[in-house]
Amino acid sequence: MDGAEVSATAGADETRTGAETGGNGMGEPLAIAIDGPAASGKSTVARAVAAALDLLYLDTGAMYRAVTWLALQKGVDPADEAAVTRLAEGAAFDFPGRGEAAYVNLPIVIDGLDATAGTREPAVDAAVSAVSSYQGVRAALVRRQQAIARARGVVMVGRDIGTVVLPGARLKIYLVASVDERARRRYAERVARGEAADYEEIRAAMERRDGLDSARAHSPLRPASDAVHLDTTGLSSDAVVERILAMARSRRV
Ligand code: DC
Image 1 (cartoon, protein in one colour):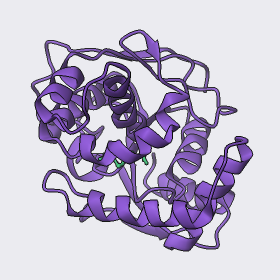
Image 2 (tube, helix red, strand yellow):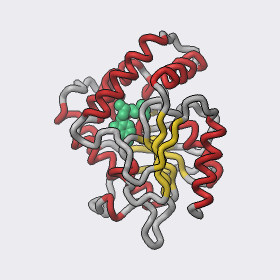
Image 3 (spheres, protein in one colour):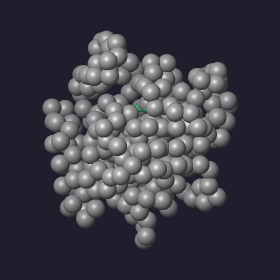
């Protein structure tokens, strides 16, 4: 995939419901939804699937992280639901150079500010579950995500893509992996970036965040009824990508 530029700002047709989107209708671009808990391997796998099928890769977690980062930058308390919601509703997103797979974190720009590095800061990690639990924040970001999927074919990654954002997606994958394996992956990512990392701390934070993401009232983490479950524990990402591409082929994606 080339480094196509994509931007998502409020648009006149954003009032359409999720049921009207997702790439299943006549003339709708193709959509593949990949959901699962933190560090289940979604991003790596989705990037490779998108590259193989020449689709856009969109990590919706990065959008929730960017809103959280912007709030912290602007001195908005992440616990202030009304203020964070206003921020999310007014934010403009840009994804310059989304196709360059060499990036660990793909570039994300919010309100003209580059949030790419900031999205992985520990302060963002700590506050993003709260921010992503706000219904108004979710509504604002889901509208942007649906607008992107209407514009072009996409592999979209998150927690609610198959259930809420793109319920009509042609292929829905729900990736899982044991918490130990996921913590090991997140630890290795941090070490590879040259950051300080403590395995036990990462594992505990991950369990806490899984709990919050699954228990929240709005769009909790859960598989769509028509999602294919794939346990990636002990599988290489290449093997997972191959399985997904085989499913895509068998569904003529
Ligand atoms: O995938 P991630 O760890 O970057 O996600 C960051 C947070 O955002 C995480 O707490 C779950 C939440 N999230 C969400 O609620 N819905 C999505 N579609 C994607 C992420």
